[in-house]
Image (cartoon, rainbow over all chains, first blue to last red; front, top):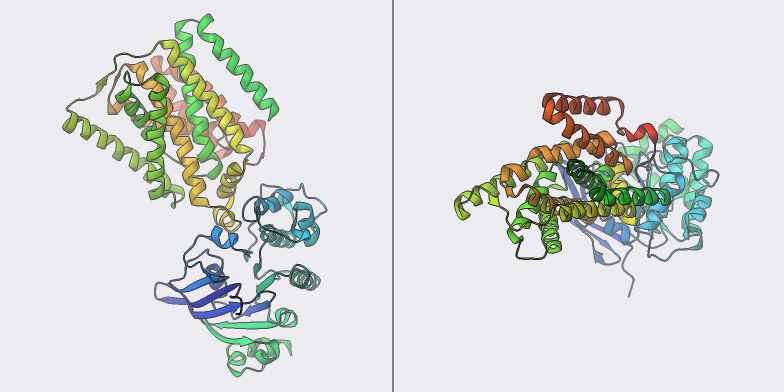
Length: 248
Length: 300
């Protein structure tokens, strides 16, 4: 029998009053996948992430982690089931030190979870994300791109199986984006994490992921390998048309 | 941490010796200081770190006083205190279930509203069901017993505050204060932590209420649910610096002394100076007076 997916969304819908932000989206994430989610502004990407991490309960539909139903559970239960996320705008604890920010996850969701060696303690996580230079600095005083790395480190400290990254490359320079993409690949290749990565910048994402999900006006309009996605007529019309024209 | 404990021990020794050397007036003044030290540091234990501004201290104090009064004389003194603490803590758990998902002004206003609700409910009960306007407490313990009880409670509040700051529980509360949703996604069961913190701080207010009520020998809802006790506790903690250990303590001593000396002769001046200090603190010293001594010290 096939193992149940790491995380599965079934017909997930989120409604804000009359507006449907996420419209009956069904997706399953298998262990070890590196998946990208793209879509124009307002496509419902972040709202969908909010449901996947328990931050927002779906209006209807279900969420299952390794076969267990998590619909409507509080975010800490998702964290306990190995689902970690970052936020689009880094939400580090500004008054705490960089090291204490990492330690937070280790003290709670990551506390009793088995972990690969590189997630074993604060120092190993700081080394992994490349922030080991000054761990005693206040998190509020480091640069925005460092905060973005720290944000990932905080999520890693919960020792997840699945990592949800929300626009971690936004606002970074070309070089920083490359470094970020390498880090994401390492997390998957070396740590065996499943990574789901939302990015507004399509080109960055298509170059690095193996599977792409396209959201448009809250609906999933495509789900497949990057090569197939770029030639999908619906996707081209909805989104890539403009972006690719710009790129050319 | 070690220095904090040493300082607490020294202060405790001084307070312990006081009834044997000082006048009755000085001891009663010290009792007020200790009461506010216990109330404001236990208030700050939860509200200072999480940023949830509770105005329900008067409710817990009053419930502790009333439930203590009901069993006074029937149970040994330590049980009277424990029952005051338990009734307040249970009320906090119930109240917390209703309001702890709210933040900011909504939480503050609702806790105050519930305090009024409880006060009126007790008043109604006394008038209609038991047919009394208050209760005369006979069989009250010695003055010294009350003093040492309140001293023990104040010490316990401080020691618990120190211990909580160093624990995962304290870290969780600090995380809730900094960014509640982020703390949740990192694995903090925020509902459990908030309810627990609220209940601990309520238990202290209830215990203090039970201990102090016997000093008055006559209690009625208006006295023990006095909003003044609740507001003064909050003001002391805020002016002293709610996120620090020593801020609320120092402010408690200063304000109790001010209150006792000024309130008798110049009551308006006391309330005015309290109001002025609060305004100055909110505008220029949001971390309280303690931030002068410990600038930028993080919450935990």
